[in-house]
Image (cartoon, rainbow, N blue to C red; front, side, top):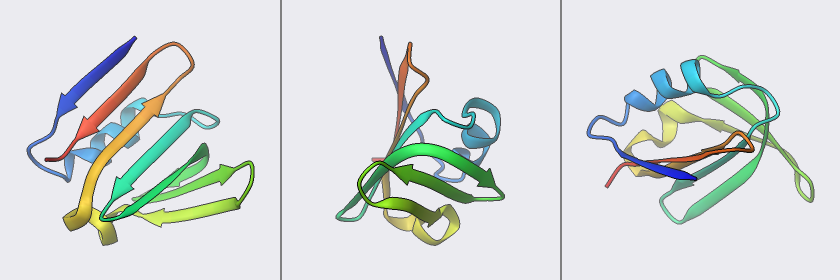
Length: 86
């Protein structure tokens, strides 16, 4: 099952990350011409740390990419949620 949420204010991503994503859930972040994905190992005050099976640990500071943020997708194993910023 997939849910798509159109987000008007990119800062709403912080509220979503705080309230909906837990450690070891799958996250994809699309910004500019970049796509990063992996299992969440840490989130705190806008810093997302993902582990990718091939590339290791990837850190993204959400505040730094807000202007270029296109989508944030989150899967908890049963449901996939996509926050769209366009």
